[in-house]
Image 1 (cartoon, rainbow, N blue to C red):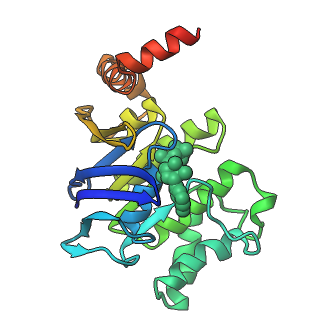
Image 2 (image 1 turned 180 degrees about the vertical axis):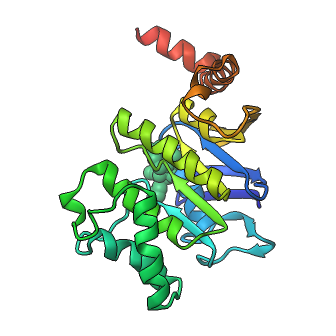
Length: 253
Ligand SMILES: Nc1ncnc2c1ncn2[C@@H]1O[C@H](COP(=O)(O)OP(=O)(O)OP(=O)(O)O)[C@@H](O)[C@H]1O
Ligand SMILES: [Mg+2]
């Protein structure tokens, strides 16, 4: 899917030589420290901005602009403040070229799926952060994408809402498994959601390691207490915190 990808902004080289493959219905998690280029890479995969080296292909086609069937959920909700919950979800379908009867059928379905029924006529500022994120999720899911790009979708909500949304997303994924590239900097979330976890590191960043997550699906709260979950979390942690970084923290303390 991605081969030899690099991106710079002027003198700043964000990442280089990133190559990755995402299988059909696979969830690939990308984890890495703040500023390592996760959002930038997703934006490139979505076709919103170009790479400065390498190439990205989705379903065999080279990505140059956003394409049908690929949908992104943004780190900061990405809702229109002047549109209601209903209108925000409907907008995605309108863009995808759906007829008004399809829109009338799908919007309530996906609003219900993310637990927002009753809030159709509220504006984003009238609902909580977690609810705004659910709305963003409903908008992305409603177009039934073949590839879902998730940029820290639960990064801006409180810890409890985050857990609820994680398990909701797992439940939705089990009903309709979709190819997903999921960006996070939370280790637990990475292991819980992913089939594989790709660790980005360095300046410029590159792929440091790819870890297979051999936890059974469907995954739920019980997954969190599996010894294998703890072992994988430890593995990702130690990959992220190599000797150099650990030393840095120890000196500071
Ligand atoms: N449009 C832009 N112009 C210049 N520099 C940019 C632009 N977009 C991103 N950058 C730079 O690229 C680097 C990576 O940013 P990016 O948002 O991809 O990081 P991230 O890994 O998503 O971080 P976070 O975990 O905090 O969301 C940062 O140093 C940022 O300043
Ligand atoms: Mg980001």
